[in-house]
Length: 525
Image (cartoon, rainbow, N blue to C red; front, top):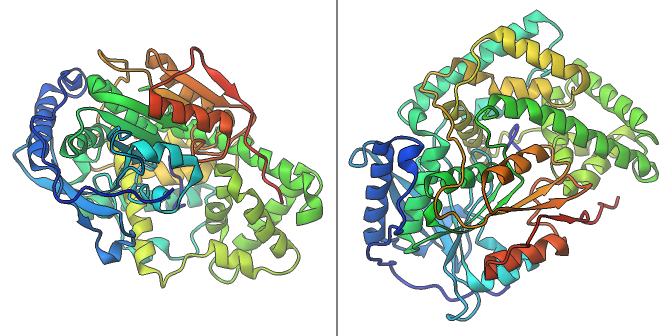
């Protein structure tokens, strides 16, 4: 799940169009039990059509920044699966061929990095960049990325002018009183109205079940009888919903850093749980900064580091740093430390420079770049998709009293992200499009064992979500990276995890029981 705008050798590619016969997998989908018979029928029709059409692969457009020999193409899907003959949208896909021999190849591995709102088109660059963690898997799979509906190149949606969206500085997320809350409520309602004005036709169809159906159409267009899938963060929820709607279409599925799939958690309660987990990981980072005070000089106890943080926030609130970095921008920058261990040292170094009298590195890192029109458009699009999907997937509370009560209570002991998170999601309280009932994630007939990977102290997707999904998917296995909290475990160097992911994706091997791994290496200052 995303918060404020944060998101080997090359093998030989098969030329031309993949032509397939009736590729729709032989086992009937469970979509009729989870989302209506009309959508299930529409998904079958779209998949059969895509299987016949295939994908016309070609060099990626120059402006996409995707290097050769990666190739790009398009897959056509219905905007509304209940009307498969109605308006169609095109989804951008890309791929790089497996690096091993033809005999070793096992098909395509599709990827989603999360969000909602994340683009998967960079996935094949794990091969061109010779990422050693994925070298073994790349020998047997084509790596396939895609932009989900509404994202990037795939019928992108928008809720605001990108330049206005990123303009700094924004108001302090932590309200001083009722006037601040009224101002934030007004902004949230205006944002929801902007989504309707700019992207109204898309909004009712920006749901996770529709993205799961799109995934099945892409599978068919690739000529794959069954799906191999790697989903990270929100991508785990796409995988969980796919496994429910199309259990017999799954071949291998790895889900990493898991969204809690309980209907009661999607999405309001999940975000409240996230506030608690972010505070926990923020506290972990402060303790690490204190232990490395010789390097950063921010305080030799977590309490002293916290006082430094409060002084920094107060200074930015009184006068935005460099005229552009206020408390909201600070949270946007500092939240990367609870998210990813790889950010621990860089964020601490930049903060340490500020404390030592040099504010420019912090200003450069936290301020938006108003000259980066492409980057700002991508940031606005990502936020629009995040909002649209979460608001459409489930019915949100409409009572401001409930939002106020819940977030005021949480903020007392978990102040780092609570109010920032609340304002990010508040457009869902006045959402101008249909809000649905979440899918009841379950194991359907034919679902093979799914591999679940999770760090125990993840901030963005708390550990309880992995446990919940594990209980719901029979035959799944859970790998826990204990005493660790980086979001996205499969991309880190940890042989205990890496070897099991390889064994599963390459050989279909799951351990006989759940596994607890030692943490990956702690960052060094």
